[in-house]
Amino acid sequence: MTKIVWQQGELIEVMIANLSDTGDGVGRADERVVFVPDTVPGDRAIVRLVHVKPKYAHGKLQQLLSPSPHRIRPSCIVADKCGGCQWQHINYDYQLVAKQNKVIQALERIGGFVQPPIDPVLAAPSALNYRNKSTYPLGTSATGQIQAGYYQKGSHQLINLNQCPVQDARLNPLLAEVKQDIQQRGWEIYDEQRHLGQIRHLGLRIGRHTGEMLLTLVVNNWNLSGIETQAQEWLKRYPQLVGVSLNRNSDRTNVIFGSETRCIAGVPHLRENFAGLEFQVRPDTFFQVYTETAEALLQVIQSELNLQGHELLVDAYCGIGTLTLPLAKKVRIATGLEVQPAAVEQAILNAQRNGIDNVTFQVGAVEKLLTKMGIIPEVVILDPPRKGCDRTVIDTLRQLKPYRIVYVSCKVATLARDLKLLCEDGQYTITRVQPADFFPQTAHVEAAAFLVLSHLDKDTKSFKKN
Image (cartoon, rainbow, N blue to C red; front, side, top):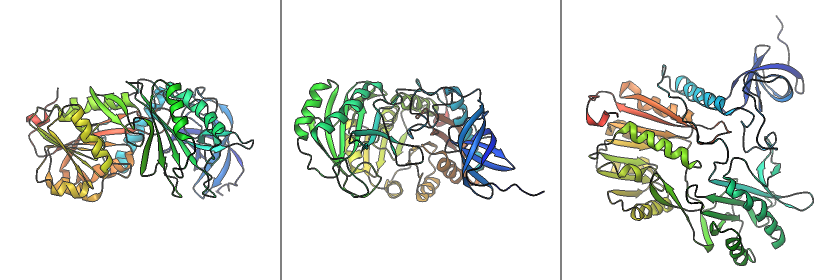
């Protein structure tokens, strides 16, 4: 039988059956796979082929012949263009199902685990108006108007926004109005092609529980004429705005923040209540973008560990102590490890602010600090960046043999890879994996995996559950 040759630009009919790791719909036609953004399993569609390979193709939705029962109308009028969200056209219940499947497939295919114990996804309290931080690239329209928004899917074309349905709604007035102030000031928008101009990004941040806000402009250099006056005007206009800062990034890069931030007016941080503690959060601090879901996942971790107060706990990749400090209140001694000195400085201040004196923080690469601690922790928390743990970290943990490991991950592919290494030769056993939805309307999923040292008596205090 002669195989049909696909041509770029050709129209084909596709039945969407699944979702890819990146969130695109996946269908089959002529025994080949087709990836189609903006589609949902159950959609029957006419698709235009835009990128053709021998065994698969990428397509663009041309016409919806019959919609999936999981398809809904997006909340945002530019959802079909804006690259900020991927799944506004998918009902929330099915988003949760898809995210659980993503975790299952990663642990089975990459990790090699058979029927891993993966719970249903911890649902977000709200699928909209949740982001406590948004950072918008700035641009200029053909008519010279200042724009802020996200890039169009698959392009570098800026989609201008005056509000965003996934960010905290209290930030929307700033998004709409600050652009006008930049326009009136005559500040030049940065041109990344020519490496000229001043303002690169607009950063907005809010304490979900306190309502305090920060406004940050990412600039090419510090010479922004009139910024002190404008910053004071912003503080007067927005009662909840507590600080205005500049962050300098003069590199040719797509990294948003540079290494130096200066407070221009107000204070350099906002206050946020998290898990019963008060934290200081700066413009460039890493803090989970969905505060309430992060608190809910922390509750799961606390319940699963059932800490008795005698444990030695190490929190690797601890950041500003978001997990370290609440857990420190339930153990004998806690130690946080973090490579960023500024984050450790904030963690120490947050510990002092909350009167927590059984915790210490160390600056340095986790793979180096773990071997120098001089203690064998009973519990280790891992919360690495998307690239996962350095192999040295895995090897060191297998040598130290902590009783319990909790691995919190923002990328399930690297989670599965690292869990496979930790569980090699049966040294550790996965008792539970709890996915959590920190990013509704996107394909991203967070997950906490709980591991026990396999040869230990499961009836000891370290393993008891509520």
